Image 1 (tube, rainbow, N blue to C red):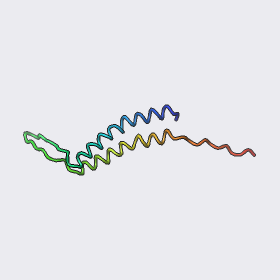
Image 2: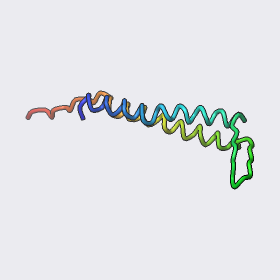
Image 3: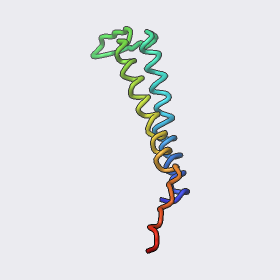
Image 4: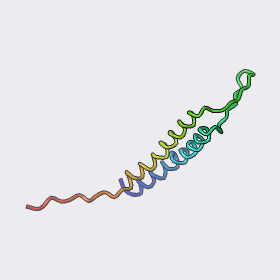
Length: 90
C-alpha cells in the first residue's frame, strides 16, 4: 500500500469514525453524570425522565471504540516498514 492511499484511508476513518465517536463519547459522559433526559409521546400519553447512567457508560465505551479505529488504522498503514535484508552472497 502506498503512502497516499494510507493517508486517504486514515483521513476517511477519522472523519467517518473519529468525529462521530467524539460526539457519542460526549453524549455518554453527559448521560453518565445525570444530565441526559428523554421525552416520549405514545398514543396521547406523554412521559419524561432521566436517562439511566449505564446508557452513558455504554456510550462512552462505544465512543472510545470509534475513536480508536482511525488511530489503529493510522498506526498500521503509516508506520515505516523495515527494509528487507538480503541474504549473504555465498
